Structure formats: structure tokens, C-alpha cells
Image (tube, rainbow, N blue to C red; front, side):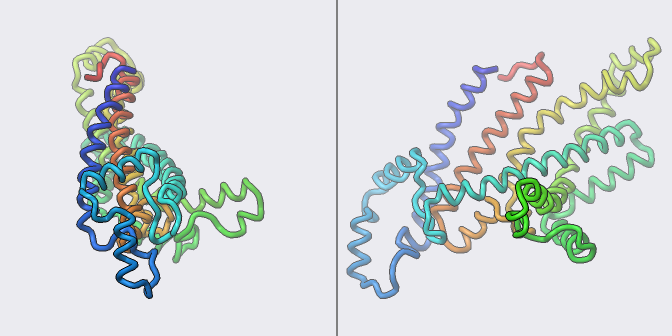
Amino acid sequence: MWKTVIRRLLILIPQLFVLSVFIFFIAQYMPGDALTGRIDPKTSPKRLEELRQMWGFYDPWHVKYGRWMGNAIKGDFGISFAYKVPVTQVVMEKARNTFWLGLLTVGLTYLLAIPLGVLSGRYHDKIPDRTITLYSYLALAMPTIIAGLLAILVFSFKLGWFPYGGTVSAEAYERGNIYYILSRLHHMFLPALTGAVVSTSAIIQFLRSEIVDYEQADFVITARSKGVPQRVIYSRHIFRNSMIPVASFMGYSISGVLTGSIFLETVFAYPGMGRLFIDSVLSRDYSVANALIIFFAILIVLGTLLSDIIMYIVDPRLKIK
């Protein structure tokens, strides 16, 4: 397995190289340049030309790409035009918020999806299955933006159970660490629950179809003929085998939540990487946008690797090729 992990990490290098070239050329044709937001309106055109010469704006593309990539390898993605601080500092501050929100979202997703999938598969073509199937279709068809707005309307404005923005209340800073943690969970729960409800449909359908298929498998029919109790058949034979593809899907779920949090964080005014990406594009802060695109690409590749590792752990008979 470790050979596979190392091989996948080595494959990541040329993938990121191709992506970095693509991002670099897109950035070259975007309006504005690295002086945007850093100069005084009274700066003369002659001074602007001197600054562009000094910063190497007229160098050949391969020279500019080598300089940009060399700094990126060192973790230097430049200065944010909007925040006037290094891009790495801006991204890392938002990445922590997105990480905790994503972790809670994935946890709630599987806590909801696994029981519903098992119930739907065990009682397929009956009232519980039809009810859960209707729910999964509604969740699949519901856009994240609409689901978020409905959640804010009902649970924030109507019922007042959850805040509709931010990460922590101002009072929590003065009341100690426990109140701070509880306040963060209180602010994260509604967006995490909304993201979980929208994300459960695929897992429910995967698990349901696996359970229905395994009910007709030869080893299950043999176990029934030997008089094995139905509860044991489901727990030891059907459920265990049905969880293999669901478990392998976890890596994609984690990377998908972290990279696909743009709409969720925007609707709930949650200061994470998704909202930062939208703000950076709207404000033409391309240094931040480019760094986020590369970061998202790394997460997707690592999510694929994590799914393969989980598959190998759940079923050691499988060999990752």
C-alpha cells in the first residue's frame, strides 16, 4: 500500500505542473496586474512604467513562469491586493474555518446517510424505502443555495435557533475556551447540516443498491438455507460488504466538501476558502484566486488517494493498481 501512496504522490507532481501552467496563462490574460491596488491614483504613467520594468512585467513568459513557480514552491504566492498581506497568510486563516466546517459536514452526512440507506435497502419497495427515496430525490434536486436560504429562513429568522453568519459570537472570547468551542459549533451546525442533507442522496442510493444486490447473492442465500438469523445475515454479511464502496467514497466526500464549499459559505456568510474564492474573483485579487485553485486541485487528488487507501483498509483482499 505504501508503494501505491508514494507512486500517487509522485504522479501528483506532473499533474500540478500542467495545472500551474494553465493557471499561469489564464492569469496573464486577466485584466489588471500585480500593481493593481498598490499604487496611488496620482502616480504618473512614467513611474508606472518604471515599476513594471522593475517587476519584470515585460520579461518572456517562461522567465515569468519560472519566477512565479519558484516562489510558489517556497510557499510564496505573492501579496493579496485586497488584504495587503501575503496570500499564504490569507488562505491559511480561511482554510482552518473550512476544515472544521467540512469535518462536521462529512460527519453529519454519514450519520444521516448510513442509517437511511440501510433502512431503505432492508425494506426496499415498502413505505420506509419509498419515503427515504423521495427524500433522497428531493435532496439531490435541491440546489445548495436554495437549501441554505430555506434553512436560514426557518431556523434563524423564524425559530431563532441558530445564527445566520459568522464563526463565533463576540461574548465567547471573554467567557473562556469551552464557550468559544460551543459558540463555534453553534455557528457551524446549521451550514454543516444543510450541506449534509444535500450530500446524503448519493450515499443513500449507493448503500441501498448494494444491500438490495447482496440480498440475492449466493452466500446470503446459503446462509438463509442454513437457518442463520436474519439479523446476523444483515450485520455480518450484507451490511459489511455493502459498506465497502460507501467507505471508499469517503475520500471523495471530504475533498468534495472542502473544495465545494463556495455556495455554502457564501449563503451563510461563513469566512472560509469558498467565500474567499468568490470575493477574490469579484475584487480581481488574482493572486489569491490562483493559490486557491492550486490548493483545491491538491485536495481533489489527495481525496482520490484517500479513497483508495480506505478501500484497501476496509477490504484487504483488494489491491490498488
